[in-house]
Length: 383
Image (cartoon, rainbow, N blue to C red; front, side):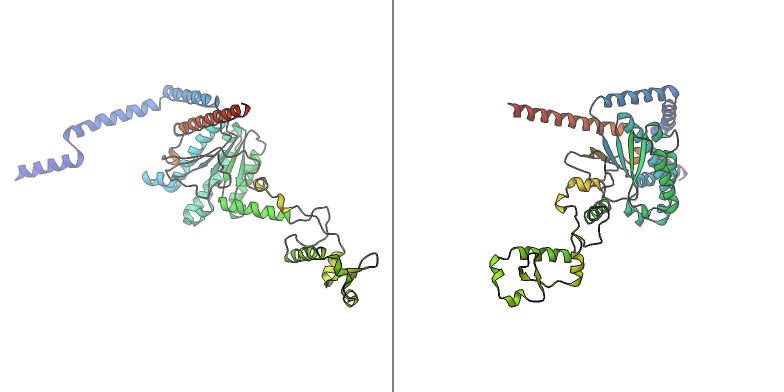
């Protein structure tokens, strides 16, 4: 009975932990892992990897380089959950990944990097997580903008794109300080979308455009009607109707032309018809009609100039990590027919040069292909 019990226990151990051979191989596997980690952390290997990175970056610089790259930094929470660490720690590791990628981008020659740091929708998360993200944003902005830090080394300035009124007061102070400290940097730009959604950006641009086109031109115009007001539209239609009345209307009975509401022309003849004029309209008529910008001149460029990204080059490349294939209300206006949108399976804290390198190579190949097609079309036209 005891022998069978011992055999059962042995079988249970083998089933739970693997075969005896596998159990004996565990110490060897552990030693191999320790040796691998030791080699990876040794100075010669670190130096070699660094040199390889520089060689690869130098090779990328020989081809076309995207001037504006955007990142949806997705997967921090999932990374933390999979590794059983705090969510805040996952976001902190995500910032370290951002620093690595910014260095690659600026070394390659990217002029503008736009990151989706905090969506307006993120305010729906737990108060603990939102407060932690705000505190981290404050800390990381201070670190990024320090003298001699990454942005200072590569001459990059920070721009905050989003609704400032939603930012906590102490965080807003850090935001303004970071923007001020990096304002002198002119070589590159880091756009931090915080807090941001593309719909809010487009709405803001439309409001700004309407406000611009609703203001009278001139230095000191009188406080007159808005160009799109109901009163102005009614009077415009009325003036058109008056100008369309045929000349025969001037031969109507004098009883109408002599009515109190009839208007006399400057040469003493009666007007072709009569129109009731309100006192307020008479007062407004004492001033010349103000000049406004023509709404028909509103174009795509007009809205471009009122977007948060005004002045930035067109978006060449948009990358989202974590395997999720959607834009999540990010850069909807800026994405155009030539924007390459790439979705990667890796989580953001895992993202580095080795995941970014194939994306850049693929983008360069697409650009060369487009250039060849354009040259081919040009030759056909000349023939």
